[in-house]
Image 1 (tube, each protein chain N blue to C red):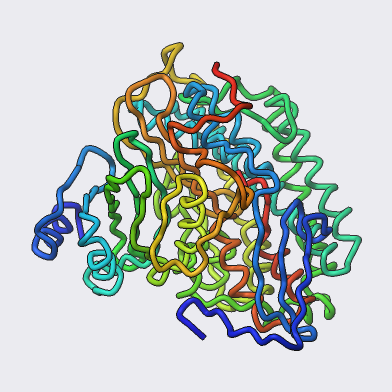
Image 2 (image 1 turned 180 degrees about the vertical axis):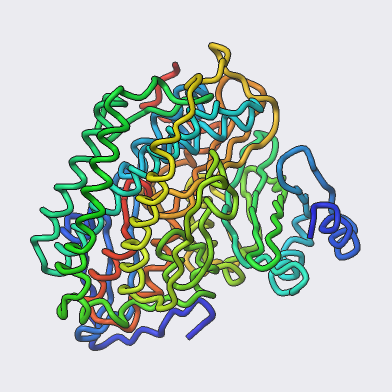
Length: 151
Length: 373
């Protein structure tokens, strides 16, 4: 499907989503309440068939966190970027997708480690790269460390 | 077994061993916690982060010219291709394109890097599985490639040759002659590689049918590069999303069907032949002209998001830049191929023997700094 066709089809599926077409890919911003249902449709519905998640990350916008999922369909060769806003910056949490895409097992642990986002129903929610007793989440913009030097 | 494929662990009969972080076959500081029932692997848990430097955080305070150099320290065997990914991402944001001469130089250099990387892998795979001589044979050709790098870029491992807009300096006058010599040398040695390792009975016994990864699992785990292609998954970024004129050269995407260690081995051997073929097409056709497009001293990307992916020697590297219009990136994410490939390790190793774990690690071709970043 092309960008426009994808947009049309998704608008019918989940009317509450908003779009951002400034970038290279079609960006879909989904509500956290619809997120899990939406992602399930994206992989299980053969019309979309987004079987390959090639990037999963998070962006700290200070007032809120934004989860970003890059999806590609190997069959249809179309790409979609799904974004979910997390408003609670003190105790951020979202549903996991690691039962749908297994690559998310590691990527979600990385996001938990570096951003502190808690993934509900993740089977192994531990820190991945840093020490178990590390304080703070380094990729957050408000992170301070005594060893950091301002350039 | 649940959906994630975790077995129920019994209290008796299992013991836990730690492989690494200082284990010769892990090629760096990878720490694997392995649950064993006799010799059978029940569970593998990778413990990462021994060389985590938070390159993503570092890049947030570096300029768009400087952050590229840090990426040479991720996958140090594909340093050149990492630089290329970043340069292309910045070019995408600036909406400029490297001149034709720079593009051809970039492709030749990238393919030379891939050859050097696969040769190191070939030698180390032999070493891991008990054959010592391939290591020395592989380094003979790799050395010749690195000398070309040294002559044109000034460095052997962390080349830092790619800059936004092209390449840093023009190629050395000897470049074309030496590249031709090297590819002729490598071409004449492929038969030797096969004689030494490919047809070896012990080697085949250690790799055939070992560490099976199905095509569906490869896609689900986000596995890319030769590791996925050996399972029959088409994922070559050079074919799917061509960059720097890869669509103008003729080459074949190597696809295997076996999905085991031997198929992964054969995929890389074939890929070396394709790299040689690409270089042969380009080396006499380097266009004249500028080697760098004109760019401003201080680069500023417009507000927005830019995603660039390239095919490194290990798979798909994605550079995701989020810009807020300043002179340094607001957020950078490196989607590194080794990170995703490593996540499939447990799936491949489970149910096999402890000795097979070494064969699997060797054929995934892990580079740990790329996993930890």
